[in-house]
Image (cartoon, rainbow, N blue to C red; front, side, top):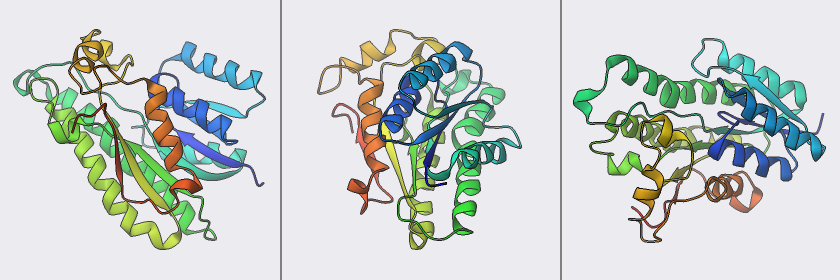
Length: 249
């Protein structure tokens, strides 16, 4: 089959959903994962069906032992896997480091970093066994917290995202000879539900007001950068961390 397929983890809401929408319009079939947001997954599927796009929701905890194999197998059922977007991420409750539990730290690192490493490994292993193609791309969604450190909020989350950025740089160099590009998008404060799930629903508006642009970003503004990195327009870009932060550095 010649149809190109993209994987998007955490694709039922927020940035992930915006990425799914853009990759559909780009002409990809899309497999997206979600953990529990059935209504969001159904909405993505309905929107895709109305436009005739091929979309497969996959209920899957990205930390499960068999998750990488399940995700890649689902994508390959649809066509030629060419794009992986590692978007799924969690923060845990907002607070200083002394308040976080071991269980939260372990879960955040498992979801944000370990699962990303494992899915990257599964995908590049498949690609390395196949004939070279120059349209293969991995985009990892990180966070400006990787560089600010997020003191008093979630330094453990910041540390996990810093790990993703190191993975991005190193893997880009490792797989470049096979035509695979690996990049990351680093969002600043964005209007998603992640803030409410962390216990501060108004955080995006509060923090966004302190950026040079004076507002939080939208999921689609982040997704636009992700989309660009998957295209031939970014064909000479690899190992890059692209800031979409409203001017925060």
